[in-house]
Length: 146
Image 1 (cartoon, one colour):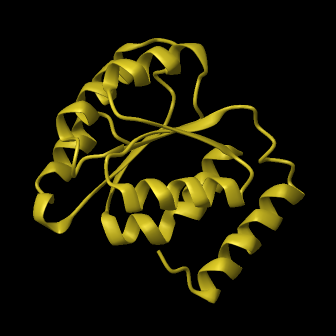
Image 2 (cartoon, helix red, strand yellow; image 1 turned 90 degrees about the vertical axis):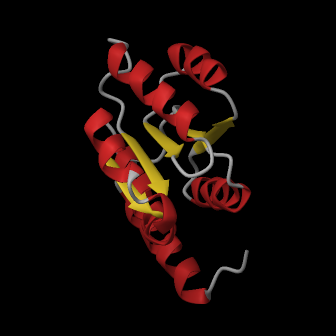
Image 3 (tube, rainbow, N blue to C red; image 1 turned 120 degrees about the vertical axis):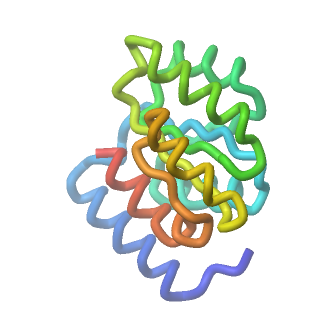
């Protein structure tokens, strides 16, 4: 994955603003259920640039077991490649009293666009198209880390 200079400058600007507010020294992490490796790499790099922990899971059971122990500040779901697992996590998040307030965002490709309204109806805060998700990722992590 090639990151352009403007993207790197944008991440640095967000990082400086968030660090100036003292927001990104949270001990909690971003939890992701992402099977798409380029997206998972992008999430990990962005989180590292913002000094935020990230944990990526491949199964809903592992995800929820760890979320019960270590409450994440943001959940990222891949509705493109692991749709069933993502809906399972979303359902369990919304039914768990301790995790009900954790914001969940997801992404889909244009081809699976019909999943977007279903996910939002199921309780996902926002579902992005994959390209928009990539552009909004630094802002998302910085916003919810506060």
